[in-house]
Image: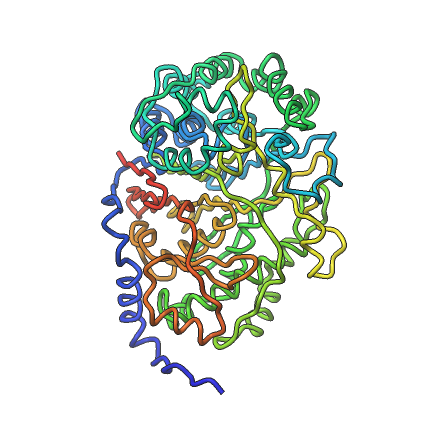
Length: 560
Protein backbone atom coordinates (compact mmCIF):
# COMPACT_ATOMS: atom_id res chain seq x y z
CA UNK A 1 0.00 0.00 0.00
CA UNK A 2 1.34 3.42 -0.96
CA UNK A 3 2.30 5.81 1.79
CA UNK A 4 -0.06 8.75 1.98
CA UNK A 5 1.35 12.23 1.44
CA UNK A 6 1.16 14.60 4.40
CA UNK A 7 -2.51 15.43 5.08
CA UNK A 8 -3.80 18.92 4.41
CA UNK A 9 -4.59 21.02 7.44
CA UNK A 10 -8.01 22.62 7.70
CA UNK A 11 -8.26 24.81 4.63
CA UNK A 12 -9.54 27.95 6.35
CA UNK A 13 -6.20 28.51 8.04
CA UNK A 14 -3.79 27.19 5.41
CA UNK A 15 -5.37 28.13 2.09
CA UNK A 16 -3.81 31.64 1.85
CA UNK A 17 -0.35 30.19 2.52
CA UNK A 18 -0.89 27.34 0.04
CA UNK A 19 -2.01 29.80 -2.62
CA UNK A 20 0.94 32.12 -2.01
CA UNK A 21 3.48 29.29 -2.11
CA UNK A 22 1.88 27.68 -5.15
CA UNK A 23 1.80 30.91 -7.10
CA UNK A 24 5.37 31.77 -6.18
CA UNK A 25 6.58 28.36 -7.34
CA UNK A 26 4.54 28.59 -10.53
CA UNK A 27 5.99 32.00 -11.44
CA UNK A 28 9.63 30.93 -11.23
CA UNK A 29 11.46 31.60 -14.49
CA UNK A 30 8.54 32.98 -16.50
CA UNK A 31 7.56 36.25 -14.85
CA UNK A 32 10.46 38.36 -16.26
CA UNK A 33 9.05 37.93 -19.79
CA UNK A 34 5.60 39.29 -18.90
CA UNK A 35 4.50 42.79 -19.78
CA UNK A 36 3.61 45.15 -16.98
CA UNK A 37 -0.16 45.12 -16.59
CA UNK A 38 -1.79 48.02 -18.39
CA UNK A 39 -5.06 49.66 -17.40
CA UNK A 40 -7.51 51.99 -19.10
CA UNK A 41 -11.06 52.61 -20.30
CA UNK A 42 -10.48 50.61 -23.49
CA UNK A 43 -8.29 47.56 -23.98
CA UNK A 44 -7.15 44.94 -26.47
CA UNK A 45 -5.10 41.78 -26.20
CA UNK A 46 -4.06 39.81 -29.27
CA UNK A 47 -1.22 37.59 -30.43
CA UNK A 48 0.46 40.31 -32.49
CA UNK A 49 1.33 43.87 -31.45
CA UNK A 50 0.22 45.27 -34.81
CA UNK A 51 -3.23 43.76 -34.35
CA UNK A 52 -3.43 45.09 -30.79
CA UNK A 53 -2.45 48.60 -31.84
CA UNK A 54 -4.92 48.57 -34.72
CA UNK A 55 -7.72 47.55 -32.35
CA UNK A 56 -6.92 50.37 -29.92
CA UNK A 57 -6.68 52.85 -32.81
CA UNK A 58 -10.16 51.87 -34.01
CA UNK A 59 -11.66 52.60 -30.61
CA UNK A 60 -9.80 55.91 -30.37
CA UNK A 61 -11.23 56.82 -33.81
CA UNK A 62 -14.78 56.37 -32.58
CA UNK A 63 -15.29 52.67 -33.12
CA UNK A 64 -16.46 50.25 -30.47
CA UNK A 65 -15.12 46.89 -29.28
CA UNK A 66 -16.72 45.15 -32.27
CA UNK A 67 -15.05 47.42 -34.82
CA UNK A 68 -11.80 46.85 -32.97
CA UNK A 69 -12.21 43.07 -33.01
CA UNK A 70 -13.00 42.98 -36.74
CA UNK A 71 -9.93 45.07 -37.47
CA UNK A 72 -7.70 43.01 -35.19
CA UNK A 73 -8.83 39.77 -36.84
CA UNK A 74 -8.19 41.09 -40.35
CA UNK A 75 -4.82 42.54 -39.37
CA UNK A 76 -3.91 39.26 -37.67
CA UNK A 77 -4.59 37.40 -40.90
CA UNK A 78 -2.14 39.67 -42.72
CA UNK A 79 0.71 39.85 -40.22
CA UNK A 80 0.35 36.39 -38.65
CA UNK A 81 -1.00 34.04 -41.35
CA UNK A 82 0.54 31.09 -39.54
CA UNK A 83 -2.56 31.17 -37.32
CA UNK A 84 -5.47 32.88 -39.05
CA UNK A 85 -6.82 34.66 -42.09
CA UNK A 86 -9.87 35.17 -44.29
CA UNK A 87 -9.36 31.66 -45.67
CA UNK A 88 -10.23 30.23 -42.22
CA UNK A 89 -12.99 30.51 -39.64
CA UNK A 90 -13.79 30.75 -35.96
CA UNK A 91 -16.16 31.89 -33.22
CA UNK A 92 -16.94 35.21 -31.54
CA UNK A 93 -18.59 35.88 -28.18
CA UNK A 94 -19.90 39.42 -27.72
CA UNK A 95 -21.15 41.00 -24.52
CA UNK A 96 -23.73 43.60 -25.54
CA UNK A 97 -23.54 46.14 -22.72
CA UNK A 98 -26.76 47.91 -23.76
CA UNK A 99 -28.93 44.80 -23.76
CA UNK A 100 -26.85 43.11 -21.05
CA UNK A 101 -26.71 39.85 -22.94
CA UNK A 102 -24.19 37.66 -24.77
CA UNK A 103 -24.29 36.96 -28.50
CA UNK A 104 -22.37 34.02 -29.96
CA UNK A 105 -21.56 33.91 -33.68
CA UNK A 106 -20.27 30.69 -35.25
CA UNK A 107 -18.30 31.19 -38.45
CA UNK A 108 -16.60 27.80 -38.33
CA UNK A 109 -15.49 26.22 -41.61
CA UNK A 110 -17.70 23.45 -42.97
CA UNK A 111 -17.13 20.42 -45.18
CA UNK A 112 -17.62 20.94 -48.93
CA UNK A 113 -20.60 19.20 -50.49
CA UNK A 114 -18.33 17.01 -52.60
CA UNK A 115 -16.20 15.73 -49.70
CA UNK A 116 -15.09 12.09 -49.95
CA UNK A 117 -15.86 10.99 -46.40
CA UNK A 118 -14.33 7.52 -46.79
CA UNK A 119 -10.99 8.99 -47.82
CA UNK A 120 -10.59 10.62 -44.41
CA UNK A 121 -10.06 7.23 -42.83
CA UNK A 122 -6.74 7.10 -44.72
CA UNK A 123 -5.26 10.30 -43.27
CA UNK A 124 -2.68 11.81 -43.24
CA UNK A 125 -2.72 12.93 -46.85
CA UNK A 126 0.50 13.87 -48.65
CA UNK A 127 1.32 17.59 -48.87
CA UNK A 128 0.38 17.66 -52.55
CA UNK A 129 -3.16 16.58 -51.57
CA UNK A 130 -3.61 19.25 -48.92
CA UNK A 131 -6.76 20.47 -50.65
CA UNK A 132 -8.61 17.48 -49.21
CA UNK A 133 -8.31 19.18 -45.81
CA UNK A 134 -9.73 22.51 -46.97
CA UNK A 135 -13.17 23.46 -45.73
CA UNK A 136 -15.47 26.29 -46.77
CA UNK A 137 -13.99 29.40 -45.08
CA UNK A 138 -16.27 31.36 -42.76
CA UNK A 139 -14.19 34.17 -41.28
CA UNK A 140 -15.18 36.98 -43.60
CA UNK A 141 -18.89 36.21 -43.38
CA UNK A 142 -18.56 36.03 -39.58
CA UNK A 143 -16.71 39.32 -39.24
CA UNK A 144 -19.18 41.05 -41.53
CA UNK A 145 -22.08 39.73 -39.43
CA UNK A 146 -20.40 41.08 -36.30
CA UNK A 147 -20.02 44.46 -37.94
CA UNK A 148 -23.59 44.46 -39.30
CA UNK A 149 -25.05 43.78 -35.87
CA UNK A 150 -22.84 45.90 -33.65
CA UNK A 151 -20.26 48.00 -35.53
CA UNK A 152 -20.22 51.81 -35.36
CA UNK A 153 -17.75 52.69 -38.09
CA UNK A 154 -18.01 51.95 -41.81
CA UNK A 155 -17.03 48.45 -42.92
CA UNK A 156 -14.30 49.92 -45.12
CA UNK A 157 -12.85 51.72 -42.07
CA UNK A 158 -12.57 48.40 -40.23
CA UNK A 159 -10.78 46.78 -43.19
CA UNK A 160 -8.44 49.69 -44.00
CA UNK A 161 -5.64 48.93 -41.47
CA UNK A 162 -5.21 45.41 -42.85
CA UNK A 163 -4.99 46.76 -46.39
CA UNK A 164 -2.34 49.29 -45.40
CA UNK A 165 -0.14 46.69 -43.70
CA UNK A 166 -0.40 44.23 -46.58
CA UNK A 167 0.33 46.95 -49.14
CA UNK A 168 2.94 49.07 -47.35
CA UNK A 169 4.61 46.24 -45.44
CA UNK A 170 4.98 45.07 -41.86
CA UNK A 171 7.77 43.71 -39.63
CA UNK A 172 7.63 39.95 -39.16
CA UNK A 173 6.89 39.10 -35.54
CA UNK A 174 9.01 36.66 -33.55
CA UNK A 175 6.52 33.80 -33.36
CA UNK A 176 5.92 33.95 -37.12
CA UNK A 177 9.67 33.88 -37.77
CA UNK A 178 10.04 30.84 -35.53
CA UNK A 179 7.29 28.99 -37.41
CA UNK A 180 8.85 29.90 -40.77
CA UNK A 181 12.17 28.40 -39.70
CA UNK A 182 10.62 25.27 -38.25
CA UNK A 183 8.17 24.49 -41.07
CA UNK A 184 10.10 26.06 -43.93
CA UNK A 185 10.59 22.83 -45.89
CA UNK A 186 6.83 22.50 -46.37
CA UNK A 187 5.85 26.15 -46.54
CA UNK A 188 8.19 27.36 -49.28
CA UNK A 189 6.80 24.79 -51.71
CA UNK A 190 3.85 27.13 -52.23
CA UNK A 191 4.81 30.00 -54.56
CA UNK A 192 2.51 32.45 -52.76
CA UNK A 193 3.93 31.77 -49.30
CA UNK A 194 7.47 31.64 -50.68
CA UNK A 195 7.21 35.00 -52.45
CA UNK A 196 6.28 36.79 -49.23
CA UNK A 197 8.12 34.91 -46.50
CA UNK A 198 10.98 33.07 -48.23
CA UNK A 199 12.78 35.58 -50.49
CA UNK A 200 15.77 33.87 -52.04
CA UNK A 201 14.57 30.57 -50.57
CA UNK A 202 15.34 31.51 -46.95
CA UNK A 203 12.82 32.35 -44.21
CA UNK A 204 12.62 36.00 -43.25
CA UNK A 205 14.03 36.90 -39.86
CA UNK A 206 12.08 38.54 -37.05
CA UNK A 207 11.84 42.30 -37.57
CA UNK A 208 12.30 42.21 -41.33
CA UNK A 209 9.59 44.02 -43.30
CA UNK A 210 7.59 42.16 -45.91
CA UNK A 211 4.67 43.06 -48.18
CA UNK A 212 1.78 41.00 -49.52
CA UNK A 213 0.45 42.89 -52.56
CA UNK A 214 -1.88 40.11 -53.73
CA UNK A 215 -3.61 39.91 -50.37
CA UNK A 216 -3.76 43.73 -50.27
CA UNK A 217 -5.64 43.73 -53.58
CA UNK A 218 -8.06 41.10 -52.27
CA UNK A 219 -8.71 43.10 -49.11
CA UNK A 220 -9.40 46.23 -51.19
CA UNK A 221 -12.15 44.29 -52.94
CA UNK A 222 -13.44 43.14 -49.55
CA UNK A 223 -13.51 46.74 -48.26
CA UNK A 224 -15.48 47.91 -51.30
CA UNK A 225 -17.81 44.94 -51.82
CA UNK A 226 -18.12 43.25 -48.43
CA UNK A 227 -17.84 39.47 -48.06
CA UNK A 228 -19.22 38.75 -51.54
CA UNK A 229 -15.78 39.76 -52.80
CA UNK A 230 -14.48 36.44 -51.49
CA UNK A 231 -17.54 34.21 -51.82
CA UNK A 232 -18.31 35.02 -55.45
CA UNK A 233 -16.39 36.31 -58.46
CA UNK A 234 -12.66 36.18 -59.25
CA UNK A 235 -11.45 35.53 -55.69
CA UNK A 236 -13.86 32.62 -55.27
CA UNK A 237 -12.68 31.22 -58.62
CA UNK A 238 -9.08 31.51 -57.43
CA UNK A 239 -9.73 29.68 -54.16
CA UNK A 240 -11.63 26.86 -55.85
CA UNK A 241 -8.92 26.37 -58.47
CA UNK A 242 -6.26 26.33 -55.75
CA UNK A 243 -8.16 23.71 -53.75
CA UNK A 244 -8.72 21.51 -56.81
CA UNK A 245 -5.04 21.74 -57.74
CA UNK A 246 -4.40 20.02 -54.39
CA UNK A 247 -7.12 17.35 -54.77
CA UNK A 248 -9.73 19.34 -52.81
CA UNK A 249 -13.49 19.47 -53.36
CA UNK A 250 -14.26 23.12 -52.49
CA UNK A 251 -16.77 24.51 -55.03
CA UNK A 252 -18.22 27.86 -56.05
CA UNK A 253 -21.60 26.64 -54.80
CA UNK A 254 -20.07 25.89 -51.38
CA UNK A 255 -18.70 29.41 -51.10
CA UNK A 256 -21.86 31.13 -52.30
CA UNK A 257 -24.03 29.20 -49.82
CA UNK A 258 -21.93 29.76 -46.68
CA UNK A 259 -23.67 31.51 -43.77
CA UNK A 260 -22.57 32.10 -40.17
CA UNK A 261 -24.82 30.84 -37.39
CA UNK A 262 -25.94 32.69 -34.24
CA UNK A 263 -25.99 30.25 -31.33
CA UNK A 264 -26.86 30.26 -27.65
CA UNK A 265 -23.72 30.09 -25.50
CA UNK A 266 -23.27 27.63 -22.67
CA UNK A 267 -24.22 29.41 -19.44
CA UNK A 268 -23.01 28.30 -16.02
CA UNK A 269 -23.63 30.09 -12.72
CA UNK A 270 -20.62 29.69 -10.43
CA UNK A 271 -19.95 31.39 -7.11
CA UNK A 272 -21.95 34.50 -8.03
CA UNK A 273 -20.63 34.72 -11.59
CA UNK A 274 -22.41 34.10 -14.89
CA UNK A 275 -19.96 32.29 -17.15
CA UNK A 276 -20.81 32.37 -20.86
CA UNK A 277 -18.67 30.08 -22.98
CA UNK A 278 -18.56 28.36 -26.36
CA UNK A 279 -21.22 25.88 -27.34
CA UNK A 280 -21.21 23.33 -30.18
CA UNK A 281 -19.59 22.89 -32.63
CA UNK A 282 -16.80 23.31 -30.11
CA UNK A 283 -16.01 21.08 -27.16
CA UNK A 284 -14.03 23.74 -25.32
CA UNK A 285 -16.93 25.33 -23.47
CA UNK A 286 -18.19 21.95 -22.29
CA UNK A 287 -14.87 21.24 -20.57
CA UNK A 288 -14.92 24.57 -18.75
CA UNK A 289 -18.57 24.20 -17.77
CA UNK A 290 -18.19 20.63 -16.53
CA UNK A 291 -15.15 21.53 -14.43
CA UNK A 292 -16.96 24.46 -12.82
CA UNK A 293 -19.99 22.28 -12.06
CA UNK A 294 -17.78 19.70 -10.34
CA UNK A 295 -15.76 21.86 -7.95
CA UNK A 296 -16.89 24.73 -5.71
CA UNK A 297 -14.43 27.45 -4.79
CA UNK A 298 -14.01 26.26 -1.20
CA UNK A 299 -12.86 22.83 -2.34
CA UNK A 300 -10.31 24.29 -4.76
CA UNK A 301 -8.98 26.65 -2.08
CA UNK A 302 -8.60 23.68 0.25
CA UNK A 303 -6.45 21.86 -2.32
CA UNK A 304 -4.25 24.94 -2.87
CA UNK A 305 -3.46 26.63 -6.16
CA UNK A 306 -1.35 24.45 -8.46
CA UNK A 307 -0.63 21.88 -5.76
CA UNK A 308 -0.32 18.29 -6.92
CA UNK A 309 -3.77 17.51 -5.54
CA UNK A 310 -5.28 20.53 -7.29
CA UNK A 311 -3.75 19.76 -10.68
CA UNK A 312 -4.70 16.08 -10.42
CA UNK A 313 -8.36 16.78 -9.64
CA UNK A 314 -8.70 19.36 -12.41
CA UNK A 315 -6.95 16.99 -14.84
CA UNK A 316 -9.42 14.24 -13.95
CA UNK A 317 -12.31 16.54 -14.85
CA UNK A 318 -10.60 17.42 -18.14
CA UNK A 319 -10.00 13.79 -19.09
CA UNK A 320 -13.63 12.95 -18.40
CA UNK A 321 -14.69 15.85 -20.60
CA UNK A 322 -12.45 14.65 -23.44
CA UNK A 323 -14.13 11.27 -23.17
CA UNK A 324 -17.54 12.96 -23.49
CA UNK A 325 -16.26 14.82 -26.53
CA UNK A 326 -15.34 11.59 -28.28
CA UNK A 327 -18.55 9.79 -27.35
CA UNK A 328 -21.18 12.44 -27.94
CA UNK A 329 -20.13 15.63 -29.74
CA UNK A 330 -20.70 16.48 -33.38
CA UNK A 331 -22.10 19.29 -35.49
CA UNK A 332 -25.56 19.92 -33.93
CA UNK A 333 -27.05 20.20 -37.43
CA UNK A 334 -26.18 16.53 -37.98
CA UNK A 335 -25.83 15.01 -34.51
CA UNK A 336 -28.35 15.21 -31.70
CA UNK A 337 -26.51 16.36 -28.59
CA UNK A 338 -28.12 17.20 -25.26
CA UNK A 339 -25.53 19.62 -23.92
CA UNK A 340 -27.69 20.50 -20.90
CA UNK A 341 -27.66 16.85 -19.83
CA UNK A 342 -23.92 16.52 -20.39
CA UNK A 343 -23.09 19.42 -18.06
CA UNK A 344 -25.99 19.05 -15.61
CA UNK A 345 -25.14 19.43 -11.89
CA UNK A 346 -26.63 16.00 -11.20
CA UNK A 347 -24.39 14.29 -13.75
CA UNK A 348 -21.32 16.20 -12.59
CA UNK A 349 -22.07 15.30 -8.96
CA UNK A 350 -22.01 11.62 -9.88
CA UNK A 351 -18.81 12.10 -11.86
CA UNK A 352 -17.18 13.90 -8.95
CA UNK A 353 -18.01 10.96 -6.67
CA UNK A 354 -16.00 8.64 -8.94
CA UNK A 355 -12.89 10.81 -8.82
CA UNK A 356 -10.38 10.39 -6.01
CA UNK A 357 -7.24 12.16 -4.86
CA UNK A 358 -5.14 8.99 -5.05
CA UNK A 359 -5.91 7.46 -8.45
CA UNK A 360 -5.95 8.48 -12.09
CA UNK A 361 -8.37 7.53 -14.85
CA UNK A 362 -6.88 7.07 -18.32
CA UNK A 363 -8.54 8.20 -21.55
CA UNK A 364 -8.82 5.51 -24.23
CA UNK A 365 -6.22 6.23 -26.89
CA UNK A 366 -7.36 8.55 -29.66
CA UNK A 367 -5.95 11.45 -31.64
CA UNK A 368 -7.14 15.03 -31.83
CA UNK A 369 -5.13 17.07 -34.30
CA UNK A 370 -5.45 20.83 -33.82
CA UNK A 371 -2.59 23.29 -33.67
CA UNK A 372 -3.08 26.84 -34.92
CA UNK A 373 -5.48 29.66 -33.96
CA UNK A 374 -5.30 33.28 -32.87
CA UNK A 375 -7.36 34.56 -29.97
CA UNK A 376 -8.08 38.25 -29.51
CA UNK A 377 -10.01 40.39 -27.04
CA UNK A 378 -11.37 43.92 -27.19
CA UNK A 379 -13.26 45.99 -24.62
CA UNK A 380 -14.61 49.53 -25.03
CA UNK A 381 -15.56 52.31 -22.63
CA UNK A 382 -19.28 51.53 -22.97
CA UNK A 383 -18.80 48.04 -21.52
CA UNK A 384 -18.99 46.04 -24.77
CA UNK A 385 -16.58 43.12 -24.91
CA UNK A 386 -15.54 40.74 -27.70
CA UNK A 387 -13.80 37.40 -27.23
CA UNK A 388 -12.93 36.02 -30.68
CA UNK A 389 -10.95 32.99 -31.79
CA UNK A 390 -10.01 32.60 -35.45
CA UNK A 391 -7.99 29.89 -37.16
CA UNK A 392 -6.73 28.26 -40.34
CA UNK A 393 -5.97 25.19 -38.16
CA UNK A 394 -2.34 24.05 -38.49
CA UNK A 395 0.57 26.37 -39.38
CA UNK A 396 -0.40 28.18 -42.61
CA UNK A 397 -3.43 25.90 -42.82
CA UNK A 398 -3.27 23.60 -45.83
CA UNK A 399 0.08 25.27 -46.68
CA UNK A 400 -1.01 26.70 -50.00
CA UNK A 401 -2.54 29.98 -51.15
CA UNK A 402 -4.80 31.21 -53.90
CA UNK A 403 -2.24 32.10 -56.59
CA UNK A 404 -3.99 35.35 -57.52
CA UNK A 405 -5.72 36.29 -54.25
CA UNK A 406 -2.89 35.60 -51.78
CA UNK A 407 -5.40 33.98 -49.39
CA UNK A 408 -4.07 31.13 -47.20
CA UNK A 409 -6.48 28.18 -47.31
CA UNK A 410 -7.41 26.29 -44.16
CA UNK A 411 -6.96 22.58 -43.39
CA UNK A 412 -9.88 22.43 -40.97
CA UNK A 413 -11.34 19.18 -42.29
CA UNK A 414 -8.54 17.38 -40.45
CA UNK A 415 -10.54 18.09 -37.28
CA UNK A 416 -13.02 15.37 -38.15
CA UNK A 417 -12.45 12.13 -36.24
CA UNK A 418 -11.54 8.75 -37.72
CA UNK A 419 -13.67 5.71 -36.94
CA UNK A 420 -10.68 3.84 -35.49
CA UNK A 421 -10.20 6.57 -32.91
CA UNK A 422 -13.64 6.03 -31.35
CA UNK A 423 -13.44 2.23 -31.39
CA UNK A 424 -12.04 2.19 -27.79
CA UNK A 425 -15.31 3.84 -26.73
CA UNK A 426 -17.40 1.06 -28.24
CA UNK A 427 -18.45 3.18 -31.23
CA UNK A 428 -18.42 2.11 -34.87
CA UNK A 429 -18.48 5.66 -36.19
CA UNK A 430 -17.67 9.01 -34.68
CA UNK A 431 -20.35 11.65 -33.98
CA UNK A 432 -17.67 14.00 -35.37
CA UNK A 433 -17.31 12.13 -38.68
CA UNK A 434 -16.93 13.97 -41.99
CA UNK A 435 -20.22 14.66 -43.77
CA UNK A 436 -21.05 17.15 -46.56
CA UNK A 437 -21.89 20.49 -44.97
CA UNK A 438 -20.84 19.49 -41.45
CA UNK A 439 -18.69 21.64 -39.16
CA UNK A 440 -15.94 19.70 -37.38
CA UNK A 441 -15.72 19.84 -33.60
CA UNK A 442 -13.23 22.40 -32.32
CA UNK A 443 -11.49 23.16 -29.02
CA UNK A 444 -11.91 26.94 -29.26
CA UNK A 445 -13.24 28.46 -26.03
CA UNK A 446 -14.08 32.18 -26.27
CA UNK A 447 -15.47 33.06 -22.84
CA UNK A 448 -16.96 36.08 -21.07
CA UNK A 449 -17.67 36.20 -17.32
CA UNK A 450 -20.39 38.51 -16.03
CA UNK A 451 -21.25 39.66 -12.50
CA UNK A 452 -24.31 41.73 -11.65
CA UNK A 453 -25.03 42.43 -15.33
CA UNK A 454 -21.51 43.65 -16.15
CA UNK A 455 -18.68 41.86 -17.94
CA UNK A 456 -15.78 41.38 -15.51
CA UNK A 457 -13.51 38.95 -17.38
CA UNK A 458 -12.96 37.96 -21.01
CA UNK A 459 -10.54 35.35 -22.22
CA UNK A 460 -9.81 32.70 -24.79
CA UNK A 461 -6.84 30.91 -26.22
CA UNK A 462 -4.97 29.40 -29.13
CA UNK A 463 -3.09 26.16 -29.43
CA UNK A 464 -5.54 23.51 -30.63
CA UNK A 465 -6.47 20.98 -27.98
CA UNK A 466 -4.63 22.95 -25.28
CA UNK A 467 -7.16 25.79 -25.61
CA UNK A 468 -9.86 24.35 -23.36
CA UNK A 469 -7.43 23.10 -20.71
CA UNK A 470 -5.67 26.49 -20.65
CA UNK A 471 -8.87 28.56 -20.51
CA UNK A 472 -10.26 26.35 -17.73
CA UNK A 473 -7.11 26.83 -15.65
CA UNK A 474 -7.16 30.60 -16.21
CA UNK A 475 -10.83 30.97 -15.23
CA UNK A 476 -10.20 29.08 -11.98
CA UNK A 477 -7.04 31.08 -11.29
CA UNK A 478 -8.93 34.37 -11.47
CA UNK A 479 -12.35 33.45 -10.09
CA UNK A 480 -11.34 30.95 -7.39
CA UNK A 481 -8.03 32.42 -6.27
CA UNK A 482 -8.35 36.13 -7.10
CA UNK A 483 -5.29 36.31 -9.35
CA UNK A 484 -4.86 39.18 -11.78
CA UNK A 485 -4.64 38.28 -15.48
CA UNK A 486 -0.88 38.84 -15.37
CA UNK A 487 -0.48 36.51 -12.39
CA UNK A 488 -2.71 33.89 -13.98
CA UNK A 489 -0.76 33.89 -17.25
CA UNK A 490 2.57 33.69 -15.42
CA UNK A 491 1.69 30.47 -13.60
CA UNK A 492 2.83 27.10 -14.90
CA UNK A 493 0.15 25.21 -16.77
CA UNK A 494 -0.53 21.57 -17.50
CA UNK A 495 -2.11 19.73 -20.40
CA UNK A 496 -4.02 16.44 -20.56
CA UNK A 497 -2.93 14.66 -23.76
CA UNK A 498 -5.20 12.21 -25.51
CA UNK A 499 -2.76 9.30 -25.36
CA UNK A 500 0.52 8.30 -23.75
CA UNK A 501 1.24 10.17 -20.53
CA UNK A 502 -1.71 11.40 -18.51
CA UNK A 503 -0.31 14.90 -17.92
CA UNK A 504 2.24 17.15 -19.58
CA UNK A 505 3.77 19.93 -17.46
CA UNK A 506 5.48 23.12 -18.49
CA UNK A 507 9.19 23.38 -17.78
CA UNK A 508 10.06 24.49 -14.27
CA UNK A 509 7.36 22.75 -12.22
CA UNK A 510 8.85 22.01 -8.76
CA UNK A 511 10.10 18.45 -8.25
CA UNK A 512 7.91 17.96 -5.18
CA UNK A 513 4.79 18.66 -7.25
CA UNK A 514 5.88 16.16 -9.92
CA UNK A 515 6.48 13.55 -7.21
CA UNK A 516 3.10 14.25 -5.66
CA UNK A 517 1.36 13.83 -9.01
CA UNK A 518 3.11 10.49 -9.48
CA UNK A 519 1.77 9.29 -6.15
CA UNK A 520 -1.72 10.09 -7.38
CA UNK A 521 -1.27 7.84 -10.39
CA UNK A 522 -0.41 10.54 -12.93
CA UNK A 523 2.12 9.58 -15.61
CA UNK A 524 3.87 12.90 -16.01
CA UNK A 525 5.87 14.26 -18.94
CA UNK A 526 7.15 17.65 -20.09
CA UNK A 527 5.19 19.88 -22.45
CA UNK A 528 6.95 19.50 -25.83
CA UNK A 529 5.58 22.76 -27.23
CA UNK A 530 5.10 26.37 -26.10
CA UNK A 531 2.87 27.70 -28.89
CA UNK A 532 -0.33 27.66 -26.85
CA UNK A 533 -1.46 30.99 -25.45
CA UNK A 534 -4.27 32.75 -23.60
CA UNK A 535 -5.31 36.41 -23.77
CA UNK A 536 -7.24 37.99 -20.91
CA UNK A 537 -8.97 41.23 -19.95
CA UNK A 538 -10.27 41.81 -16.42
CA UNK A 539 -12.65 44.71 -15.79
CA UNK A 540 -12.92 46.20 -12.32
CA UNK A 541 -15.98 47.76 -10.70
CA UNK A 542 -14.99 51.20 -12.02
CA UNK A 543 -14.95 49.96 -15.60
CA UNK A 544 -11.16 50.05 -15.86
CA UNK A 545 -9.78 47.34 -18.11
CA UNK A 546 -6.71 45.29 -17.18
CA UNK A 547 -5.51 43.30 -20.20
CA UNK A 548 -2.72 40.74 -20.24
CA UNK A 549 -1.10 38.91 -23.14
CA UNK A 550 0.53 35.50 -23.01
CA UNK A 551 4.35 35.57 -23.28
CA UNK A 552 4.37 32.04 -24.68
CA UNK A 553 3.57 33.42 -28.14
CA UNK A 554 5.09 36.88 -27.63
CA UNK A 555 1.57 38.34 -27.56
CA UNK A 556 0.56 41.95 -26.97
CA UNK A 557 -1.84 43.81 -24.65
CA UNK A 558 -2.68 47.52 -24.50
CA UNK A 559 -5.09 49.79 -22.64
CA UNK A 560 -5.99 53.43 -23.17
